[in-house]
Length: 70
Image 1 (cartoon, rainbow, N blue to C red):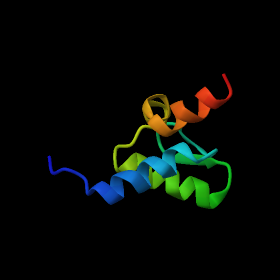
Image 2: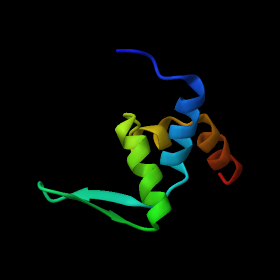
Image 3: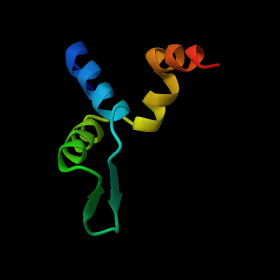
């Protein structure tokens, strides 16, 4: 599999982390919750293989932010 461009990787991870939208499937179709633009960028991130929960757990920026409030 070809590696993703580094810039596209950062944009995709940002789309996944800075997003309150959700995407759900009933087996036949997909449905989004939240703002349409956030849903669209979440779809982009998912199509590129970015898993929001994984990125949120491993993000050094988020870890640094959380440390500020510990």
